[in-house]
Amino acid sequence: MDTEPRTNHRRPAMDPMRKTALAAGLLYLATFVFSIPAAFGFYDGVLHDSAFVLGAGSSSGVAWGALFEIITALTGIATAVVLYPVVKRWGQNAALGFVASRTLEAAMIFVGVLSVLSVVTLRQDPAGADATGLTTAAHSLLAVKNWTFLLGPGIMPAINALCLGSLLYRSRLVPRIFPIIGLIGAPLLLAAAVGTLFGLHDQVSSSSALLAAPIAIWEFAIGVWMTVKGFRVPPRTEDAPPTPPAFAFSGAAV
Image (cartoon, rainbow, N blue to C red):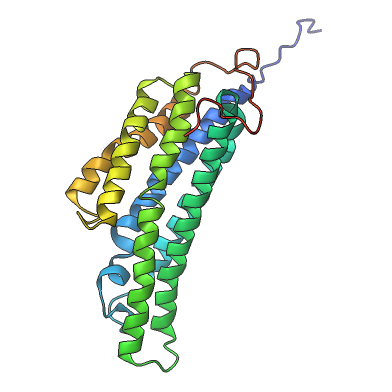
């Protein structure tokens, strides 16, 4: 008769903070990955061919581009929702600002998607409009798309970096070099957006790409770090600064 005690070979459960870091990291990488196809390729015909609304070219890629942008918007909001319970300990106002800026960025993306899909609808169902009318309507909708691209993905990542970067710098949840890159990149991205707003350069240009590079590096780096390494120091309630009153600034405000 076997009298040896049975051992439990079940794997230990993952630490809740590790789960949060993993989820936030994967969501950050998802926003990074799914934003690329829509920006390069799928919208090429509808954005750059004035005869697209009249039936020129193919519209098959537009639906895929719209889907990828929707995923980008939703995962963007999810990153803020997942991180909020953790980072609010180092500044509730900045944490709320991060959620709000992510939500506003997603709203701008959705408006842009609606504009592009409306052009596709005009192409498929012109409702008796002549070529001039269709072209004018399409140009108007694409103008909305271009401005949402500036006000959403063109500006809001800078606000995101100011909010989340300040919190991660204080908390040391990730190496401080990452939030430093974000905090440096934020004013550079805002400068690029202002330059586009006043016609100094195109939003898609070498100068704009150069100014936007630090923000892209910051977002990709923290996504990889949180996915692979997790948080450096598990935050403890007793180590965190007290939550300020709702009417006061936390010290990590934007």
